[in-house]
Image (cartoon, rainbow, N blue to C red):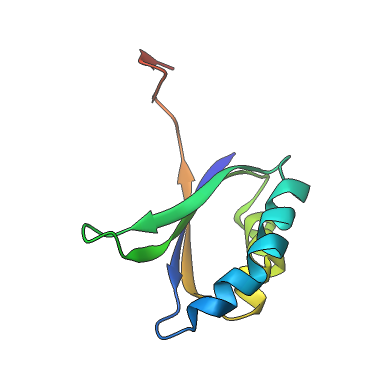
Length: 97
């Protein structure tokens, strides 16, 4: 199954903490590329960071939850919350799928 994971970043966290953990976070994503298909930050209309999003292939929401808990951004408190939503792609590359 495919899941969309929406993250909300913790408010008031020192931006230096994100930079300090960015290499470990990106390494984590690379090490889990068999499940995490795509990932990246989200921004509001004022171009202020508003969290992040992953598209994950996994057998269950519990498997997705385990990935989230293993991410350095979660364990260091950079993420405040998340939502795991099952996703069904119907359009890609200009075509119906």
